[in-house]
Amino acid sequence: MIFPIKDTFRISTRFDEPRPLTVPPKERTHVHGAIDISARTGTTIHAPERGTVFYFAAIRDSLRRTMKELDLVGPFDFRGEHYFYDTYGGIVLLFGQSGWTHLFCHSYLNQLFNKAPLRLRWKYHESPVRERWPLFAWHTFEDPTPVSAGETIGFVGSAGQSSGPHLHYEIHHGTKWETWGDRVNPETLWTEAKI
Ligand SMILES: [Zn+2]
Image (cartoon, rainbow, N blue to C red; front, side):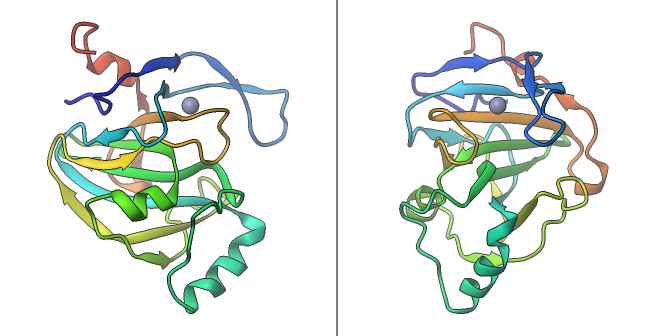
């Protein structure tokens, strides 16, 4: 496994830290279940392993219909249009050959569009995980794209519910939407020496 960030970074939130829920009841808390890696906006995200990549965006539900209509009139210009993001912002999702799903969150869509080596096309469809996360409408770019370990798959941003540029990095057991299992602490994959 390759650590996804090679430039300067700092782990700002650990896997076991409690976080407030983003949906009611807000007084409840849950465990973060991911690590937050603070890094500069635009820092390259590398694929930790070989696999298949999808691009998504978590969009506020109230704007779903508008977004769907916009899809009908051509490519949407996302520059500066950060307000419609919800919690996770732009999402890079890697189904790894190890049998794990890696989730990289808070990317700006315009950065993915403009810089990623993959050719991204905006394509609306309903979220395959809508049952699990009903607050979001999702859009994807293109069909799944094969990538090799270390390949650039995205860029650090601060889209969605985020107080500064960072990478929210989650790992789930399983590579099928329906069968996602327990989360893995990404920090356990790398020794201190490696990072
Ligand atoms: Zn986080």
